[in-house]
Image (cartoon, rainbow, N blue to C red):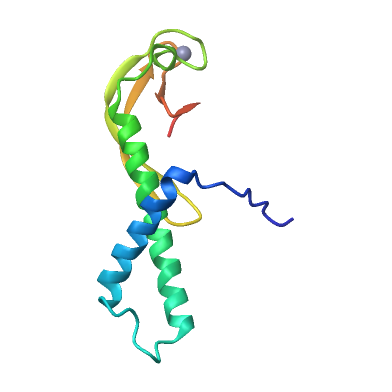
Length: 128
Ligand SMILES: [Zn+2]
């Protein structure tokens, strides 16, 4: 079965930000004149795909790291298995494979002494 793709509307206030980022990227890639005549479309398209994948993964990684840097809210400090308070642990490296690349970040961990399981607040399931 084909993977269903959900269209996401880009909020209007973000469009100028994305356009400015694209303009800046273009400047760094090709200089003020843009790509020289003769630059193959396929070559530009491949480069844009790679840059889009990198940008998407970087956005996700930075978002996850910023989220993980916030204090963990009270409801997420309880064990999802038994509901008892968990013991905080030092942040641990997390890594998630996306369809655009791998996102790596550090996330605070917690441990339920009763269930003898470790948890991450972003994933309310035991283990990692
Ligand atoms: Zn528990």
